[in-house]
Image 1 (cartoon, rainbow, N blue to C red):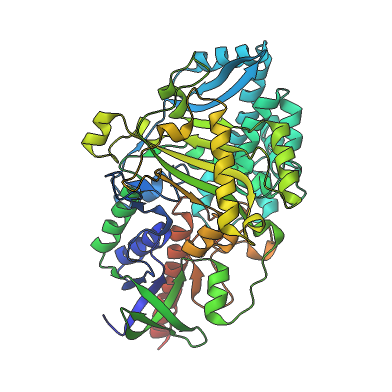
Image 2: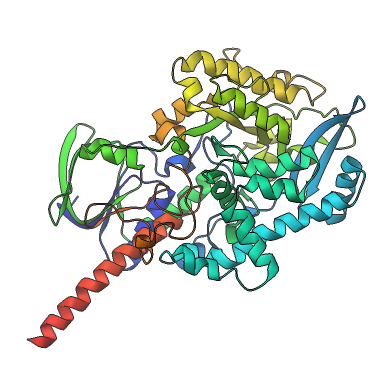
Length: 538
């Protein structure tokens, strides 16, 4: 290991790997320092249940926001596979179980399923009209995610052309998204289906004046201008491995099991002191990229960190290994087609308004909303052949309205309670209890792993378990002074954020990694131009 590099990157998550690849391709020397033994951060796959050869993505599981441009630029070779079912929402009417199935491959089936729910064709048409707003927004904004930030006033002019564009701006940027949902849609179940994308990972409600729910919604709907969420073949770890390989090909160096001792950011060259397996090292860098959150950076620099209330995380994650798929009470649909999409449970519009109020009052919701899907129904390569032959599957649950504050006092007890309530939520829709379908370890325990916001913060450093690091940001410069920047700048010269805490960060996107790399290359170019000008004048 050298004593100096052009760039040192703190953390080796997927965004750091994207940044390292771009910088290495430009000829810069890059060193990545990772605190764990694995490269990939929150995108790694693990053998969560040692008795079974199944590799699950513990924290992240689907991909929508990763730009195709980055994959082309870096020559990445991973497959994102389409799910046949977009979503399945079970419901009960007149004592009988039914389900709303929205297909990714059969629009007529989606239309008929919506007709069975509502009794009219209008609700499906209105849903299409509503989602058209998101598509229009994506068309006007997606390419700008990999460019310097544009001022809000300039960004708004992109939506001035036609009535649909103006309506998209008004509904998604100027007013709480609950207004548009209630204006376009009437059915409670359909409204709930839409608003979940505005709540995943954060603690908010449809009419939140902060509009953080609008920003969250946009990040779930604009990816590659389609917003479709796809399954990474081989699990999320396959994406991380491909990114690591791309970075290594450019000459990037890696150190794992790193304990950072101190940072000196005051001098022109930045200094990082750290230990690897008890051996101390010090390196200097012209540029320092930070892949973790501002809260962690503040701890290393002695600065105060002042989060906003909307920065709090609100997610409960469950990973489950099944020995068989639970059969549905809604027998019209097979288990395979229901579970391969996003399975919504207790996510009606009014139910989520109630669960938000309960959580805001310091109470774990009686019926916490959650959504589930089975990776292995689209890609079973994460299971060993013998498990596939026996009918094993994985299940991932993402719980909503479970803010950090509920778990802060007694995480162990509250985690167990939340786990029981989410399992009960699923049990109401299936013919056999979920626990009876779970794989069993040799010690007799069920193959179920649960993570609260407290656990996520402890493992990944994300502030209060916020999977976005802090509140999602707009895709434009909300503050005029930020126009023309890359949204990665910090108060220190040549120290840039390359993770989700940067503007336009969040989810498995690689966007802040790309933008941090572009900022460094912009600075390098400016220095080279200055040198060339000075030399010419002499």
